[in-house]
View (cartoon, rainbow, N blue to C red):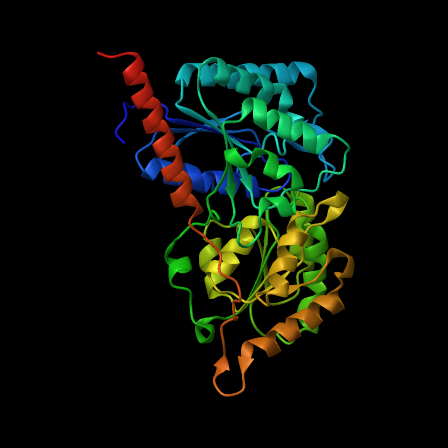
Length: 406
């Protein structure tokens, strides 16, 4: 779809508060939309990530904010100060001004109203502006939502979807995990729900994963890093207790882990364990590893499955966060990966899981073998999302042509 350079087809809004999973998924969509010939403005409200890849999409970095802790109740700016009403008003004006100026064909909002209710100070007026301009609003959500235990919250979400959201793109596979499993009221807006399949980058490492005999070492990753310490601490001690003590280990920690805590982990790391910040070549490292140890976030899990890497996952589950545990339990039951809960995370238990994984991955006759997957999952989320949005824009343009004939 050829468009003038000053035209914006898709305005993407994403706010990552703790980890970077939401940002990662949205960035993959932005890059694919751009490759398909659409003009994309990518409005990011979280802390900047140095290796963010959105292709040729234009980045609009809002004044950054993040959650103070895993309760997500207190929001802080880039200097660590709690944001006040004046700060929020300033950011809201910047966002609305950018939207008015670009006049996009589509507004794609990550998570809201299924999440990110902390951002209503700017999302409510943004959605209202889009509706007043006749611009369709799409909610982009992952496969599993955090359970809503507050009375009336699920009903509020349904009401907002019915009033303000034109389409809900669920980046998952209903044959694997239907949205109703985590959000029972989804049936009330089923006419707006479109399953796209999982959003995964189909790079060379994913398409042609290394064979088991070509892999070596252990790759440990903990997402954005804000809640990485328990896993990092266990790994430091588990390495020398495990059967894989003699192979190289690499621990990746996100930029959201403060420098002081990161440097402390570096100083205490045993011999043979490299500690680094997150790297843009994560999928390459994953495809080369004989074992992955990680949390169970959407992106890491899908990349692990795509690269066919044997894995141990420790789902983040603080403050009633059930999403990672639900996904991990489903895959563990299918025999795809090994699950260790946060409650049971000790160096000794982790070392035992590692030894079990080593034993499982070895074939008495032929040596290392690939993990046997018992699940088939639709992983064409970037392609299907792009096609859906492209067709939506084309319909909108045709409607304009009919209403305003030359």
